Length: 175
Image (cartoon, rainbow, N blue to C red):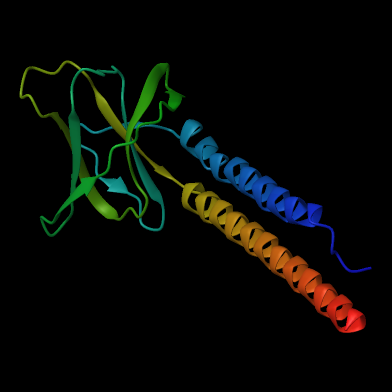
């Protein structure tokens, strides 16, 4: 049986769509290690996050302020830690921490500093956590999305090929 009915295109599209939805679920699983991480205050600690992701948290959400986080390495190299627009909460040692930044490729010896851009006094505390598993979950989600989309597109191309072959056969028979 060759898929010559046009509804097979819909099946290919739905397969790709369901694959992307599944990929979203897989990638969202990357937030679980962030939620379950142990947060260390930034006061005098250096982050040991080689081969891990570095999550930066605050205990006071300040949506009206822009807070910039940077990590300074052993060679005084400054790394900008990109902000995250997702409110992920981690409870650690009786404190509720809110995710504000995440560096996917952490390194050892980083000293994390967060400062509001408006330079007004800041009463928030900041902390960090070295997270294992976030990056792999995101990459697995991307892989599922690409694989599902490719299979869906390949099946749609096969449906097109079968429909075109059938038209040629019927045109040859009628001639």
